Image 1 (tube, rainbow, N blue to C red):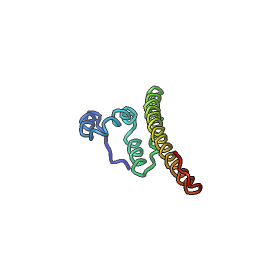
Image 2 (image 1 turned 135 degrees about the vertical axis):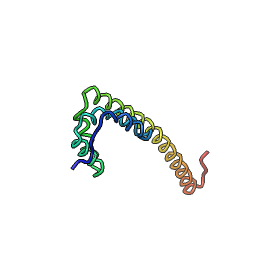
Image 3 (image 1 turned 60 degrees about the horizontal axis):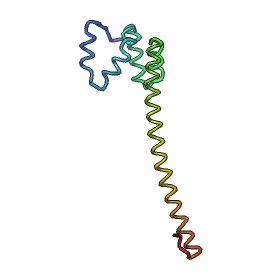
Image 4 (image 1 turned 135 degrees about the horizontal axis):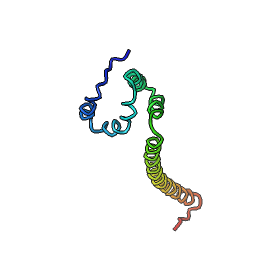
Length: 119
């Protein structure tokens, strides 16, 4: 059963009441959501409530135009590229720190075994 009756004339008022962090999501997926019937919208909301996020996103994607899907892909790709660059920097720092520790341990072991300090 769907307890929602959508009045499109009130849509902007509803969007204005959204928290700022949710407004971009509503603007991005709003057109696809507006095309849904009340029953379809309720079913979509229930997918999120029931933590079936993948199916909820598939539902939205099936209602988006190809251009909208490609625009969404471009945004996701950009975020992945940025994350990969940040991860590469972190990995380089970890590798450098690990090599420094290993170098120090090797020097300690060399001195312990030979009694000759490395200079």
